[in-house]
Amino acid sequence: MSTRGENSQSLLIAEQVITQLKIKHADLVVDEFNLFEDDLPAFDKNAVGAKMALFTGQDSNSKEKEAWTKIKEVYDRFASADIYVFNVPLWNNNIPYILKQFIDVVTQPGWTFGFDPSTGYAGLLNHKKAYVVIASGVYYQGISNNFGSDFATPYLNDWLKFIGVSDIENIHISPTVVNTDYEKTKQDVMSNVEKLIA
Image (cartoon, rainbow, N blue to C red; front, side):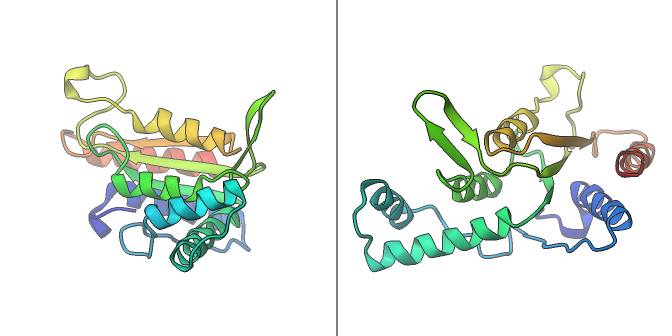
């Protein structure tokens, strides 16, 4: 997921992750969801109406049913995967808006999480693994806060655990712009990916 296409550094590393996974799992089938190009439904008033109708046991109108059908299709596609590879550029210290939209679409009660009044929330997408690739142009771990922050990593980790995905590998490629030897940084990350998935 990147607006930079083949120039995206997070995409480069995400593709390296997938390449290594294909080597490790010969029968791996890849389903790529490009959030900027694929059809991602809006969680609009019709979707909210359908969700509330389900909660209250009421009937949805035709537009609400259509909206919910599209949302369920995205969820089914997401839930069918055993391994997730997220390609995430850091935007304004956090995730791109379109990824938040995707999260809001698929994160629904009874689908990705359950709730018990006595014990609280419980994730439902168990026994899955996630690789989260995050690229940033300036920020990197350990640099002064004057150069930015990373709210994306803790947010995505928290969300994944919330929906039941506890086996998470974070892979950071940074800084990609303010870096006098980016080629070495890139090669180090790619080498680490090979070791991680070997």
